[in-house]
Structure formats: C-alpha cells, structure tokens
Length: 362
Ligand SMILES: [Zn+2]
Ligand SMILES: [Zn+2]
Image (cartoon, rainbow, N blue to C red; front, side):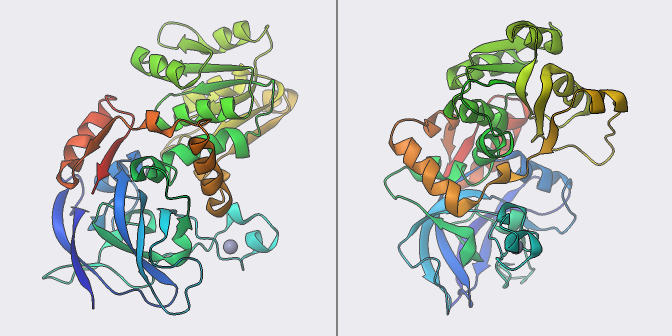
C-alpha cells in the first residue's frame, strides 16, 4: 500500500517552495522506505529551486537526512526495518570500472530508487533532489542509499554527514590527504569550508588558516578549530598565507567557494609541490586562466573533491564514532532546528549568510 506524506516541493524555476502531499510507493526490490527524522537545508536544494541543476520540475527537495528504515523491498540485504540510517547519494554499484578497480568513490553508476514518488491528486512524477527527496515525512530510496550508523546520536547531527559536512571533511582527509604537522588553508568558510577546517584539525594539521570576506564567518571558523584567520576583503590572502607559513605557503589549500579568483588564490597560496583541492562548485560559464609555466613549475597536485571522495559505508560510521567519542563536534554545525513548512525562509537566511545549517526536524 502506498502512503501519503507531506513533502517540500519546488514547483518551477524560482517559484517559492511549498508543502504538498506526496505519494510514496511501497519499496520494490532493492528499495527502502525511510521515515525521515531530520534533514538539513543545503545550498544544492536552493540550486534545484533556482533551476541551476536541471529543469525536471517539480522537485522533491532535501537530501541531507537521517531516519529510520520503515520497510524494505524483496531481496534487500543492506538494511532492515528499524535501522537508524544516514541517507547518501553515492550508493555504489560495485560493477562499473571505477568500482572494479577499487575506487568506488568514483562510481559512475550509483543507485537510486527505480519507482517514482508522485504528487497526490495529479500523479505528477517528482524528481527527488540528488535521488533522495528527504524534506518529507517518508521517502523512497535505493537500499544502498541507507548507511546504518549507531542510533545513539541526534538525527539532526547525523543527517549532516549525508552531504555538506562530509564534503568538507572528506576534502581535507580523503582528497587533500592532510597529514600530521601539515599547514592547511581553507578559502571560503560556509558549511563545507568549516567542515574542511574540522577535517584538517582531525587529521592533525599544525596550522589551519581560514580565509573569508565575511568577519562573522571567520569568527565561526575559529570556533571550528581554525588557528588563524585572514579577512580577504582587506588583505591579500596569498601574501597572508605565505606569511603565516614561514614564507612557504600551505601544504594543502582547500578552495570551498568555486570561483576562478579564489581558485587562483588557492593555487598561489600553496607551497611548492603542495596540493590544491577544489570542493566549491563552479558554474558552467566560469573559466580559469593560469600561466602554464606556473602549473608546471610549482609541481604538486590540483585535485577536485566530489562529495569529499567519501565512501558512505566506510566514512559515515567512522565519523559518527568520532562524534560519540567527543573528537568531532557535529552539533556546532546546526544553527537552528525548523519545521517542514519553514524551508523557504531558511533559504533566505542561508543566502544572507546568517546560518550554517538550518535542519528540518520531524
Ligand atoms: Zn560503480
Ligand atoms: Zn547538499
């Protein structure tokens, strides 16, 4: 029997989101229905609403979520009803070339639910954000999108690992491979940048330099563990980072903005043979121009980090453990807990830079 639940829909380009009744089918083979307990408001949800990702309206928004598995379809072995899970958008296939080569975080055939959720009444098929659609009391996903973790943590905190916080921590730990004693700079200190600061500290960096044009964000980055801050609206960040690293530049520079100007800063703010990690998401029209001789002469590596190069089955339980041990304070990322019908206002506050994360709690 399909069920009717309330969910947040983006009906069309730039139209305000609204709560509608959504039909959630019973899980088919390899699928699961999850009772969502919490779902964070991410920039990607706003991009869907604005038409920046695709034009397959209406979207069922929300993808940074945790909840409890309610039912599973035939042949499902990954999870069972009652499991506390974080939803992920990287349910790896195990069969593609990347998976077979042992690099499943590059999987290019990740799984989503095969059946569609629909709008009650019209029967219009919904496109779930990142194949999840968790601003809803219940959602239908592929079972592999559910990662079971210790239930002894708040859902609002656990859900954050499903997207932005994982992207930032992973950019430092997985992609940047920050090691003990490294110097790290993070350019752009929103949710993902702050998580990169946290990741760099977890990995044992000796200095973590936070760079932003907004003083409030720098203060926040300090509370996340940044050892130094640079206001790049007033100071040349490349010079400042060099000064703070004995004239060398940082070993790893994480670009969490996704713009050519800040990428260039990252490129020149690293030490010779250092690493640049791009985790900020650029737009299609952006172009990068660098002297090729500098790319050659400065050596090192220029990397991109998709979803923090995470493997949910490996990284989510590990990070939840660190949180439970008191070594990773995820609660700091939750600015406010809101109701399902407050997502539109949460977008405004996020856009204004007033919040790190608003989390819908059911
Ligand atoms: Zn694969
Ligand atoms: Zn996201």
